[in-house]
Amino acid sequence: MSEEIYSQNLPVALANVTKKGITYSYGETNMSIAISFAYREELNGAIKEELISIFPNVDNNRYFIENNNIYFSIHLLKDSTKLELRLKQTHNSEKQFDEFKKKTKCFFKSILEL
Image 1 (cartoon, rainbow, N blue to C red):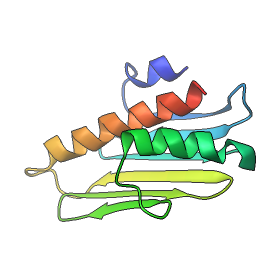
Image 2 (image 1 turned 120 degrees about the horizontal axis):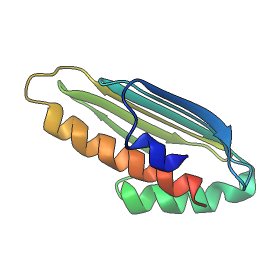
Image 3 (image 1 turned 180 degrees about the vertical axis):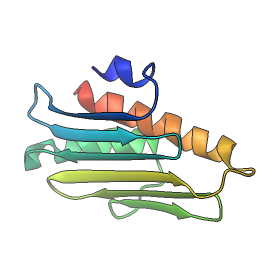
């Protein structure tokens, strides 16, 4: 299922439960990505480890960027994680957006493989 994320035409929307019991939803358009995970509290450490390996600047279970080009937010709780990425302007911001989009998809795939 995670392999399809990289090849499907936009928009994409998925929801399911992994073998480890992680419930997830994933939505993508050409201007945004929204991901949420819900899981048992004992999986929090593994989720946070994956998150920090891809987004090393996570501070106090949060990672946030907002500038003129993009809005990117991660919020990690003890039993859920939410990510949101939005392109605010298309002029001169696609490169930064694409960089975060790639990392976001990588994180999503890593959680599905837990």
